[in-house]
Length: 382
Image (cartoon, rainbow, N blue to C red; front, side, top):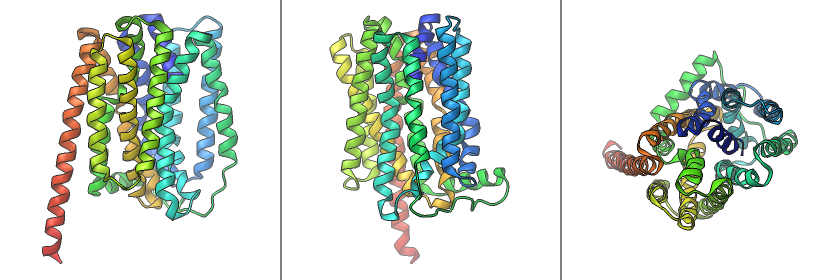
C-alpha cells in the first residue's frame, strides 16, 4: 500500500516516470547491502524479536510520512528518505520472518507451511497496492497513508502471540557475522538446485517483477483513467495474485517446480507485453490480472523450494541470499523507468518483458541440461 501511494504522490509532485521508479529503488536498494547481514542475524538471535523490532520501525516511519503529508510540506526527498529507512528495517528482518516458520510447525508440515507463507508474502505485494489504489480516489493520498500505518498494528499483536512448537537451530551460527555470511553464500552457490532457483528469481526481479512501479504512469498517461482507474488496475492485480498463490498451494507436488516456473514465467512475460501494448482499459484490467497471477505463482514456487531445500541451521542465511536477489529490483525498476523516459512506457515495458521471456527459457533449459547430466553420471559412479 505504502509503495503504491508513494509512487502516486511522487508522480503528482514530479511527473517523472524515473522518479516514480526511484521510490521502489529506494525501498529495495538496502537489500543489496543488508539482507545477508539480516540472514546471519536470523541464525544467531531470536527471530521473533527481530521481526517485531522491524515492524515497530516500519510503523514509526509510516506515521512520520503521514505527519509530513498532513502538514502539507511533503517533498520528493521525504518520500525517498522514508523508503530507504523502510528498506533498512525490512532487509534486516525479512530472513528472520521467513525462517521463523520452521519453529512453528512440525517437519511434515513444512512444505505446506512454507507454501502458505510464500503465498501471503507474494500476494501481499500485489494485494496491498490494490487496496491502496482503491483508497487513493476515495480518501486522498494523505489519509490512505494513515490507513496503511494503522494496518501494521495487528501484525505486531499477532507476532507477539507466536509460540514455537519445537526448538530450532537458531543461535547455532558460530564465528563472526562475516563468517556466517560467507557460509550462507557458499551453501547457496554450491547447491545446484538453489543456484538455478536464484537465477530464475533474478530474471523475474530484473524484468517482469517491477511492472507495478509504472502503474501510475499507465493509469495517468497511457490509459487516461486517473487515480480511480489506477485503483481498478491494482485491484485486478490483487485478485490475480491471490488466485495465483492459492493455485500453487493447491497444485502442491503434482507438477515439478522447474516446469511450473517456466510456465508461470513465460505467461507473466507474455501477458505483461500484451498489457503494455493494450489501448483499451477493459483489456488492460484482464491482462494486469493475468500478469499478477503468473508473477505471484512463480515467486511462491521459487521461495517454497528454496526453503524446503535448506536445513534449518542455515535457512536464515540462504533465504537472505534469495532476498539479496530481490534487492536487485531497483535495477529492474530503474531500467524500466529510464527506458520509459526515452521510449515511452508501453514500448519500454514490452521490450523488457520480452527479455524476461528469453531469460526464463534459458534458465530452465540450463537447469534441465545440468540436472540430466548429473543423473546420467550417477549410475556410472556407483
